[in-house]
Length: 188
Image 1 (tube, rainbow, N blue to C red):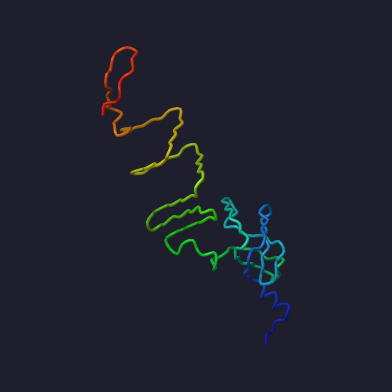
Image 2: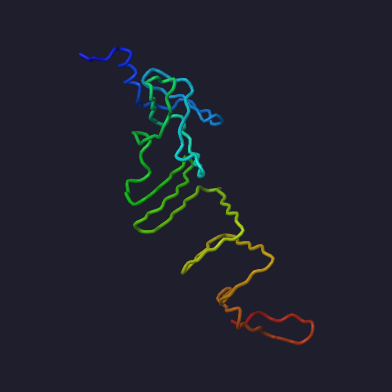
């Protein structure tokens, strides 16, 4: 027989719960959670970080979450991190990979064993990098695109430039004539 009063036993049982998010108010950072047949009132949900670095990754309807209540009263509970379950598995089982998968199919992962960063975005996605200076420093770089536009006040290429297999620096033209006429095609 328990030495706790029914009220204290109820509170103790309500200190940590699991439930499913049923509604989310993103503007106010609160959600409602279903625990068995009970649906809570609006409760604040936590974040990974909220100091000088802020990370916004709110819960979504259908996500399984923890509710923590210091007093054992669900009205004062906080909604904390979620965890994998039947219809929401972990994005990877690789211990060396940090991964984030989004509902639209976007995937970001870094494998610290192979030193590989992978970003896969769905079709029709756009990527923007805005900065005063962007430096890419690597041994080899490949850019594959249907169209490639470079817009700059000045472009400096401090290396050999090859256009369609022809070195630009040492190229010559056919049928060169002095005056205003155009030169012929580039000598291969």
